[in-house]
Length: 373
Image (cartoon, rainbow, N blue to C red):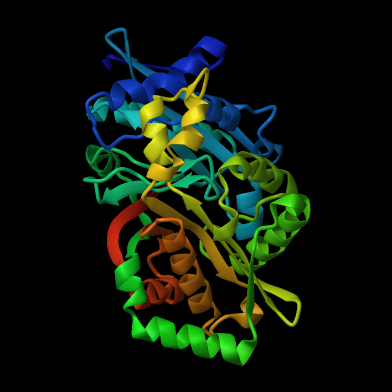
């Protein structure tokens, strides 16, 4: 008889147990970056997070010998299934001790819930969707995660494999170094030719007209990424909420728009890697940690290219090279000479080729798992 018991999160106390469990899992892991507890509360708030306007989620905790030893969430994302014409459920927020029995019980619970919703497949980790933390770290465990990227112990892969999950897709992350990028004559040549031929003009975020700028982001984001595997468009409410969260951290010179003849054709969002500051906060922004966001900002050495896209009608003209060149040179002016371009689908030839043209190093990989239910 199994010594593992699973309970559904149904109280505020259990929700906090769910949120704080990673502190137990990663207590001896020097690379883990504690998430902000207030952010986790916001993400998991089914009344206030606009994601739940088109999705459902159940959270589970695992106990063994009277101790909390694991957690998982099961998710039904109606927008994902509508866009992809699927009956797919997701699992996310997975954390677990190195114990296959515990992992199996958690996966069983998520799978059972997904099946009860009339879905036929489970895919993950999605915490809670492809627009949030997506994938499980597969390669690159000797480094801290960049902003908004997942991190996990290597044994999580074994837990998934032994349960019977199979690979659905791998995601790539490239390390970009200013000196190596700027030494790429090919990138410089493509960017110069594309700029001259197209008349592409690059402008940065106008923080004073944030609402108007956000409308431009919505237009490009949901148009440029639509063909990608796993893509789910952000609703207006989700984009508004995301913008509200990122606005205090945004560096205007790294949020770029591209226009040709006054027509918006592309967008790039690059964020400073605030994980380098969050690591010191141990999940708490208040009462005084929020001050570090300003006082320690100058110590940040990394940035992360979160999104960079050109609308389909203007793709394959080298315009992305112009954005890459602008990003690297602008980041250098801020004293940032290291960057991560992530995540990129393993079979997205255009984006992987672009990273290689920049002399980027494929230094991390992430895996998405799937299984019929």
